[in-house]
Length: 156
Image (cartoon, rainbow, N blue to C red; front, side):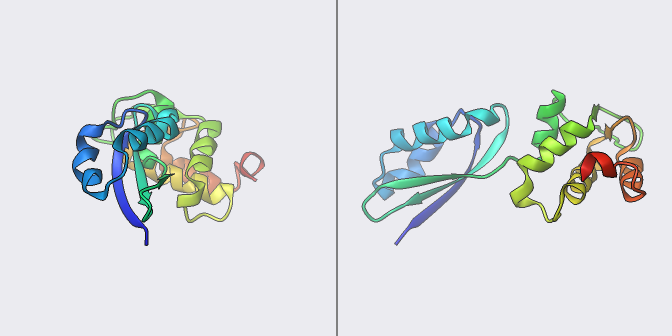
């Protein structure tokens, strides 16, 4: 039987404090778990990362890393602290097509889109609420342009 613990950690900065009370009673080596989590999440520094810890009967464990929420990936690409307070009137950054594709690739397993075009449309949907433009266009205008085929060469 496998026991599963799900947590959200700061990429590369998990520590024993919050994990100790959850993992201690399960008899697993907390230090080894923290080290494994930090190693696997260091690429997501500054972002919240979902982590599943699978604890086996023999007290061995496996770590499964999810991807951070899409908004965190968008913030990371743009180097911004947060989204717009009023996304209809305030814009906080502009993603390039390549950045949107990179985010779509990073989230591919979690997205519903069957191809790059559909996945980039999902990224654009998140940009609407964040006040982020794409290729210099509002996210909604970008989505209209994608539907009209203006980006087929870059997204297919």
